[in-house]
Every structure is written in C-alpha cells, then in structure tokens.
Length: 66
Image (cartoon, rainbow, N blue to C red; front, side, top):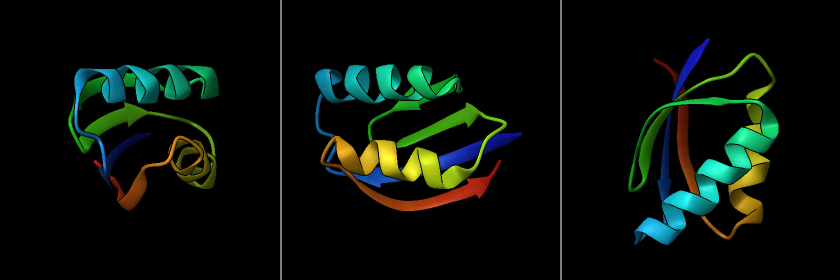
C-alpha cells in the first residue's frame, strides 16, 4: 500500500537521508522523497512509520493512503 507522509522539521538533504534510512530499515520502499513530504510503499502498520520518524526528532503531520 502507498502512503503519503507529511512531516515537519526536515530542513536539509541530511534530514532526507536520515528519514530514508529509517524507512528502508522498516522495509518501506521510497516512491518520492522531498522535505517534509514523501510517499512510501509499505505493508506494515503506519504506527511504526510514525514512531521511526519521531525517534529522529521530526514531527508527523499526517500519514494518508496515496
């Protein structure tokens, strides 16, 4: 399933790299990745996605089916 994830606090390419690495560790495939807005393909519970992002110090605004 595809999800659009909107965050806050991501301000640079380093932030994108950190979130990308965290999503890959969960087994999520990155479809698109931009600052504070990205789409992933993920078959698990979105609570894990939220927890991984928040563990990096970023906020999660929304996670919606894409």
